[in-house]
Length: 173
Image (cartoon, rainbow, N blue to C red):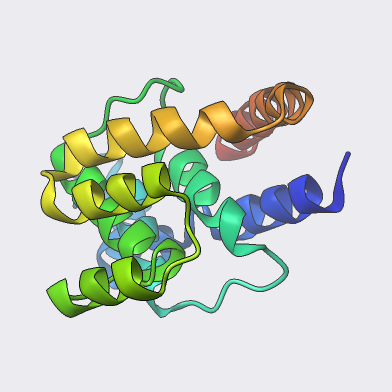
C-alpha cells in the first residue's frame, strides 16, 4: 500500500466517529444505558463531518481530503454517490474550503485568473461552487474517482470493506 492510502485510513479510523463526542450523543448513550431506550439525537456521521471544520488533518495530502470526507459519510452505508441533503451540504463546504480553497465569489475569480488547473478542472470547481450540493458532489466525485489509479481504488475498496467490518464488530462490544 502507498503511504497516501495508509494515511487516508489512519485519518478515517481516527476521525469517522468524532461526532459521537458531542454532548447530545453522550447524553443519548447515557440514557440508553440507564433506561434501555432513547431517541436518537441526530446523525453522528453528520456531526463528524461538521466537526472536521475545526480539525487540522495531519499527514494527508490535500488530494485525499475529498476521499476522506466521502468515506466518513459512507461508513454506515454503501459506496454510491447518493447523499443525505445535510451530509451533502457539509461535504460540499469542506471540499470548497479545503480542496479548492473557495469561500467566496472573489475566490472563484482568483482561481480563474491565477490557476494552473486544467480548464476542465476550473469548470468543475466553478460549477461546484454554484451548484446545489447533491449535484455538485455527483459531478465532483465522478471526475475525482476517474482520476485515481485503478489499483489504488481496489486497495481503497478492500480496506474500506475491512474497516466497515471492524467498525461494526467493535460497535457490538
